[in-house]
Length: 341
Image 1: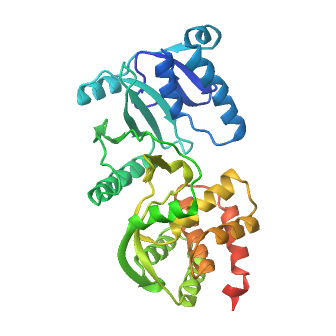
Image 2 (image 1 turned 30 degrees about the vertical axis):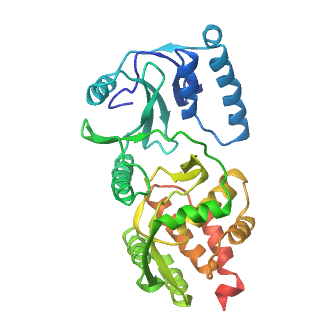
Image 3 (image 1 turned 45 degrees about the horizontal axis):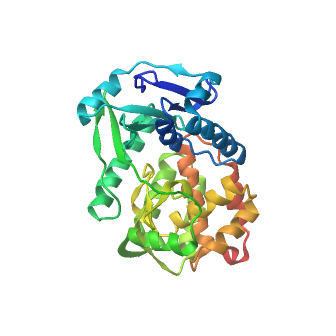
């Protein structure tokens, strides 16, 4: 909030705490409150219980609950006034602060509690890069009929913002067949050996650029051992249960901040089960490898998992994130008999 404020002229609660908020939600009425709580989607059991209890009281007994809960009255910001002019609407905002501290996400509602959409605004250089990447992905994928186009894209104070359509559906853990059917939409119809695959060439160049060339011999060994050709795909990049919504019986992906145009088939599928196993089920490295292998249908599972983990190391290096878990997984996969022989 150094560059701009994101509040409309409404009453807000800060969750989980005022000093360290994850979300700031408008609670002027029960119906506005019900919508705003959709912005708060924790995945730990403790946080889910907390949300369930608090949202119940604000949604059912709004006016009474406000007497017992710390409520802040905020003034409308210049940014919200700017958006109102752009959209020709009177707006009510709720705010989500990304864990990576790269952006905020605003849920925009009208006074009659219609959700207009979700707006992303960067608060760091990485956030700017993510929003520009997502805008590129949305233009490309909407032209293919895979997703809907954005509602609005522009610049405010020299930074890009992106307003996305509200997807009225449910997130959750989906069946393997549903995930595989969704990923088929990303197929670009070309195949390459791993040595010549654009995604692998890009990974090798990134290892050199980031000065982590120690992993190049492992990457090259994996490619040389491969006997298959791999599809070129649009790669979501952060393909996880919380970035997929079921709308009218059909799965729709969103949040394309890590999109790769020249992607490798298998990376998104592994990411989906990696995120479930690591973040939800809290599996250790060896158990997570087994879990991933049990859920993906690839002829060269060890090879693709090694390449995936190298890809994750690159991403962590770029964002200054610690990688000891991924390194441990790499060590264990390298010791598989299928890879050593």
